[in-house]
Image (cartoon, rainbow, N blue to C red; front, side):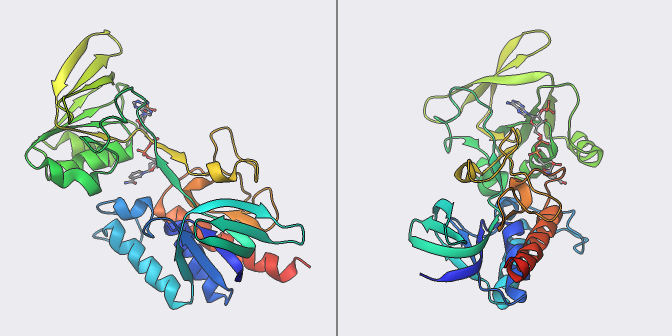
Amino acid sequence: MTNYEVVIIGGGPAGLSAGMYAARAKLKTVLLERGLPGGQASTTDNIENYPGFPEGMPGLDLTMRMLSQAQRFGMEVKNTDVLSVEELPEGGFLVKTFDGEIAAKTLILATGAKSKPIGIAEEEQYRGRGVSYCATCDAAFFQGKTVAVVGGGDSAVQEGIYLTKFAEKVYIVHRRNELRATKVLQEKAKSTPQIEFILDSVVTSILGKDNVEAIKVRNVKTDEEKAIAVDGIFVYVGKEPSAELFRGFIDMDEWGYIITDAKMQTSRKGVFAAGDVRQTPLRQVVTAVADGAIAAVTAEQYLEYKD
Ligand code: NAP
């Protein structure tokens, strides 16, 4: 069994940046990722606010560059699902994966966050039949059609704007009268003719034979309910951490985000966390890569001084 100095779980920007810093510091490093490296950022059509790219950059291109940069310094990548992590009595950690066991002197947890569902009964039934959580992945199926976006944050508004490249009409359904999204995005959406806002409203059900054909929307102020014909629903009601695997292993906050200090140390010595999975005031690519760098440097210091 290979004993790595650094095992990174999760291949989004936080994990990739941690991998680059750790490998560049000549630590034997492996990154474990169940899907394609890149994480949520790789499904973002255009990342406009990552410094150094004034025209913006497709998320996939940016994260693929991060991957090749980390690999150039010697980071290994294993495509596998992590089943459990535990601390060994003699020190260090054991990571059980779908493809076998890996020994680690330090762990960097960078499993990110995932889309939250709206929480209505039919949502799961219509997933992939008109209900989507990723406009970059699925927008092209809605060429010339009508879609609804649920949510009022940056993701909902940004992806709503993106969807107008394909859909003829985009409703943005938000539960309050005011959007949470930043002003610049709000203004852009409000000046996009294909977008219509349905405010103070929640989606109460999804209708359709096999695929989505309509949504029922209830105005929370008047209680009035109406059906709106749509071919698709894009859900952007926030994120939740992908940290279930680590419950009981390290401390988390009430929402399940991993608690770290400013050096990305968790409640367990030798275990660090970085990016969207940790309790942090901002979840962006730029903060994830910064977290990853700090976690790797702290891991390096830990390995040097732990004995
Ligand atoms: P978010 O900011 O948490 O917004 C979630 C939205 O969904 C809110 O408007 C919320 O309504 C609504 N919502 C939550 N639960 C709901 C439910 N069950 N039913 C209906 N609506 C519900 O999430 P996000 O937009 O995914 O953004 C996450 C983070 O990424 C944020 O920090 C954001 O700034 C960042 N981000 C930045 C960019 C960018 O800079 N361009 C792009 C995307 C994301 P309320 O407003 O009423 O709470």
